[in-house]
Image (cartoon, rainbow, N blue to C red; front, side, top):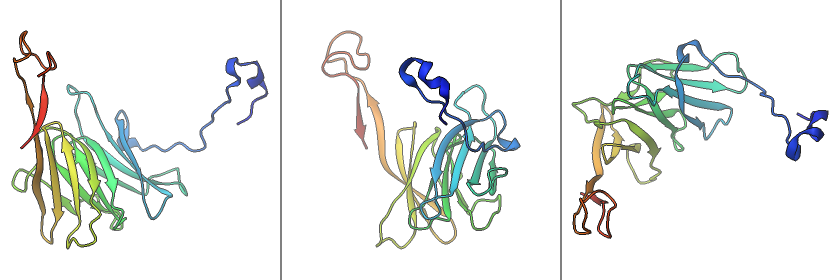
Length: 201
């Protein structure tokens, strides 16, 4: 937006005005943790809500907004734990993977418009022991089932397969912090030439 007063501002900075404001009451007092645009329908934007504060954890929300209707979200998904990351599938754009603070992952089908996930991990099927900070879909045309990977501060990179009946987890890489006192001193991470490092198991 061009403002005549810009010429009097230091650096000649312009003025930025919001075109739309997207909000939902269920996401009130929650932090926006991730945003992703649908690869097939660019007017659809998914937003995850949670909390980065370890001491103030609560429920999570994922809202899917459309630029065609900024007044209300098209879909809203609620969960017991904060939603920390999300990603639409490039191959199947209706599938939305979500990583949660409690270490679980979920997959929603936005075509259904139901609050219930299509797939959800648990202790039985496998889960991370720390928050999930990233999810990415794998694009393998030879793969029989859709898969995505997740990464967590528990040091694991996990692969998730969407089989017919359940979500199957496989740990691809397990990173561990290894400290060595070879560099002298108290052996703290990063001290000396042989400080801390990550190893794959």
